[in-house]
Image (cartoon, rainbow, N blue to C red; front, side, top):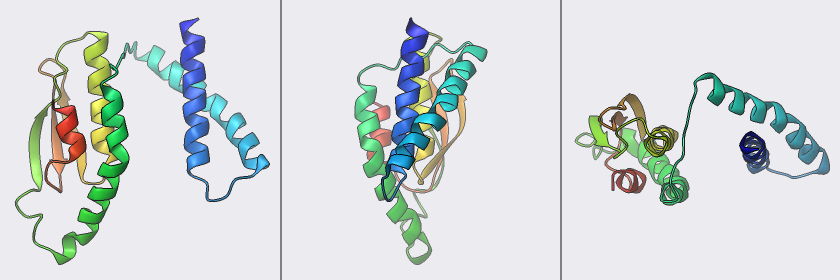
Length: 154
């Protein structure tokens, strides 16, 4: 029963991503989204089962997820302005971030998976490496610490 719930969640997420990427909505697009989302959902569940993943991010992860759009907007502006400013010189480079997700529990795996994905989704940073035993991530950042990064390191 849990797999059906997971499949439904991935299906709804896939439909949402499709619909959010549109500039104009139509019935045909909705049908296409519903149909195309099913293989995506099946692939997501299959991939998690193949790697024997067990991820259970906590409710506090919703705060980080909510901060993603503003972090993307802020980092996009900063990255696009970099050729004309010198503010980025001291902030860019590699740094280690403690995600407070050490260990192999489902909660730690979920926090680490979501944190690494969100950090790489923003244009100002990219996760280069992660250490599951210490719960840290090595991040290459073009900008200073973002609001998203601060939420994930609490």
